[in-house]
Length: 474
Figure (cartoon, rainbow, N blue to C red):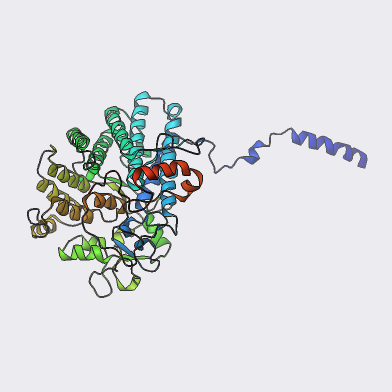
């Protein structure tokens, strides 16, 4: 009997081995393929997270712009961006988390979307988001890898001239605006901003075009004028309903990054900065209560830039902005109205006066944050705020109020501030440099792609944080 069993066992093993066991290696929770729409959503999410985050490892612009001050670790508010490799982290985030996913979505779209008109809309919308991502890279670093970027086989991409690249992006944006077809579908609910509505995306694209035009108005006034006027004629945002806000939700992993960074993690790393508190308090700005909590004495106060500022002593960012579902704002109606005011002051034909758009921008911002028309009207009557008396220079009037309205959008405040030079910010205590007008190139680029990095650094005037970039002329 033992011999029979011994003889049967090998046969059983042979029979068992004829069964396909490849499914054992398949993770049922990990998809084997991904759709172009899901990659697009991921890229949108990644871009907004980069711009919204309060993580000091890559988003330190609230500190640079003296909206917030650090309580314990003072490096970033003192312009030390090296300790945490912030330039590397932000560079990698824009390229990997946003642009790579947008490009991955583009590559499989031809096989993923059957309807040609829908595919054209999707490609246009995707490209608009790519243009916006490139905009931040260019205005943060200057010359960057562009034409040879996003190619995994090219370890040593050349850097392209920032202004020439910027103009190429404006041309791409024009093609995208023309390609959008309101009668056809696009991404549907995979688009977190406008649920795939091509008409709304056209307004966004025109508003972005206006933003990009005004950003280079000192570098190339002729191109700026043409781009701004055509954007306005084609149709920019005309209400708060048009604003591009990412709808974060209460359930992870799609929550407001500021909630993750401060509330979920139990961090007490930031308080209000004295700079913004003083500027807003001096003009009795009604948004103060929407931006910050009251301090332990029942008023509003902030920590001095670059100085250790105990969390219990000062105002904090408002509860509203730290809610898990507070939306991520990347471009809004108030900003567009300020851009229109700037365009009017530059004598661009945008339909009305600078004062008209300035007043509308401030009112829009106050209403968007939860204030009332009555509060806005009273605020605008103050001599320090009224357009006729707020300051001798239009860049001062618009610059200060635009900076206030860009609270919690630190990178956009930084871009605007470098162009308009208002408000004037004093250097923080123990500053490691002058006011930073760019980020240095990543350390990894020095280690891996240094020949191209060195050439780019020489072309822009030096790889230091105080080198002014192509758009920052004064």
